[in-house]
Image (cartoon, one colour):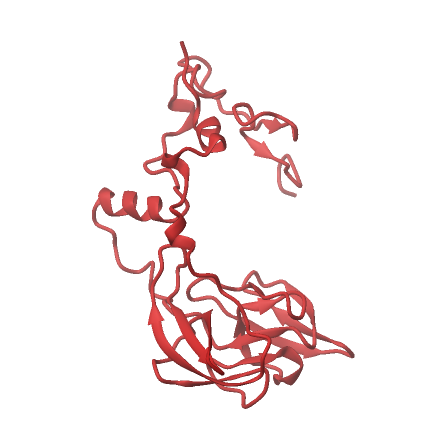
Length: 232
């Protein structure tokens, strides 16, 4: 008798494939008030690749992703003030060429884009009511002038430079971040009861386009591909 394949086990959401709730006990947000805050503490959490800055403003606490070069006790301008690393300002108040991260897609909705360690975006031009930003993917996107962003580069750029040395280190790291599978067995090396690509016969892997409404056990191969076939 076969067993649940990996996709089914993850879809069920057992403790093995679930992130611990304490990893997400801290959420990143921008305050609705304007003024000058203070970085109280720099902290690490399992679910973010960069350290977080605990910031106090008018007796209220909020958390933001730390920029490279910020320090505990630093003053941070929010909503208004000077253009300096660590400050949070509307895109309309920033000059062309400013490096930014943790960008709001809609004014007041909270930061959504450019949050991974070492990443940054750059303001390239300004239009009537829009600010065009070059994202790390090299694509340009227009944002509302009132959408806010943090100034600088996300800290911990050298996170991936240190070698892990042991498989155990990688195992615990993957488990802390979203319950990811490690080590991952190639599907074609599995038994036929464990995966649609499995079995000892016919190991010529063909691109397989899964149906959009396929159940977790059969949703393997190319998932909702934009293009198929050879690149031209």
